[in-house]
Image 1 (cartoon, one colour):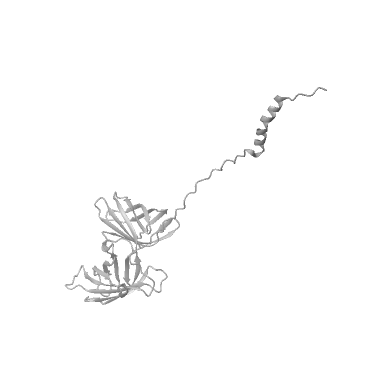
Image 2 (cartoon, one colour):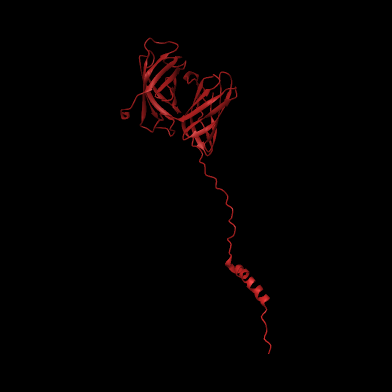
Length: 288
């Protein structure tokens, strides 16, 4: 019987195919391509601008400074100032605009986006109605930037929270100083002592109540005061005596206040009188 001879070519082809077969069974596994990820944008918290604020605008065109005092309230990315906002050129209380709504109501408004801040305020001036746009940024509760206005001025501005905010009752600030009449100045200036704090009967923290004791005045010896804190400034009235006071802090310390006063022409005492004065916060014994 004749024996069959092996087919060497067929064997070689089979041996060469084995690695390919094993590779198809998992010997050469490759991971699927990674799914591309979208970069996560970091969360940026909006600046918080609320409470009593003092703003100072400094002209770069030789127009001096303008101080603005207000109480901001923020809702989301928008905020606004109180209707009794004061705008005071050269920080002179006798030149202040505002605090006499509805005759003149000045209400600044603003927006925040992260640390970026924009504030717009319109008010009457000696050169006509003016609208100021402030653009800047917040660092904590402090603000700073540049401004332009509709009368052609521009410059820089800063803002900070009140230095001496009024705390809840029964806490008060005590002030002492002097004043004098512009129309009928005295040789010896009268002395004034003021005790002022939050109005305990009011729910608004900016509402104030207090009293003043006056010495060496020919027409008034005391005042019963009510009013509002506006930033570090305050506006006070004695309704019975028909007296009005606006006091502004001397920044940056805010311990001294310049004020202007006036009595209405129909006041029972000091009728029509007006003038200026200075008071300083008396240190509390707890400050030592």
